[in-house]
Image 1: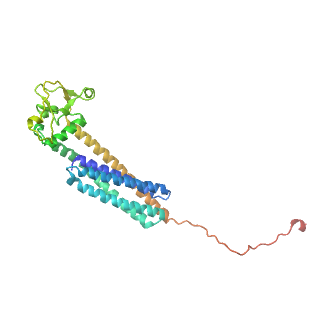
Image 2: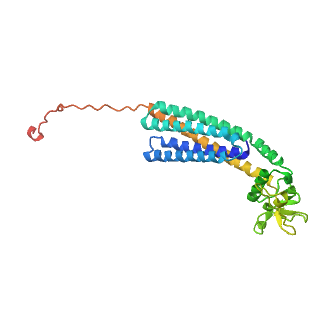
Image 3: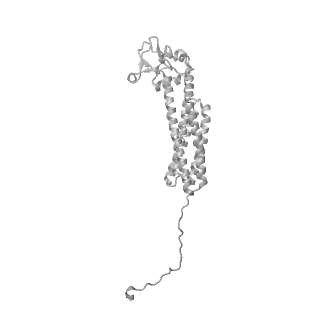
Length: 298
């Protein structure tokens, strides 16, 4: 599993946990029907996000690797949705068994997700090393596969970089045009001039043309290329994304635990007995006596 896959799964987990945390607050006794309806809308949107993420991953080549994580997402989503409905039902109808089931289920799910978060944090360096090895296996870039070249092209275009480790030198004498540093980029990014024996080329991964037609040289052009290599930038961005995702993930898990604590508070309120004095109604007139007039007694 690559770092991109881990971040995708973490993001989906964060959205689902946030939605079901809102579901819990919709289950408190002080919430109105409008809050419950808003919670349902949020859950529907989260389901749509999960389905969209599944569809996006289905088009990727790593679908077999991330499919177990997607299945876990659906199972977790269904379980927490049922628990949220039970929490709403138990709080509104004052059913202790439903609130107890909600509290126990959410506590176990929160513990499981927290453990997975800790494991993901400890495997962060391993993920970075896997990313490094995966991209270094593409070297030398002049003999890389077409699908790998396309990935590097996209990376160079997005990150404004060139090559993987040693910059434009990783491409040898044929530098792709995605490394070209425009006049506007030269003020914000570091750009250098390649040697005179280099040429800028265009690759067509899906083209049936010959190799000579696949390389269109732009000789005698004094252009600038990006100086920074792409691999350190990629690892830095992915490391930041993982740290940010896990930070939000831990925060939402803590809020989830607060929701469980509030559910336990509702249980305590249900068990509290309120002593109300009995009210007795009778049809008999009250007993009274006539008081002597003060003036007559004088």
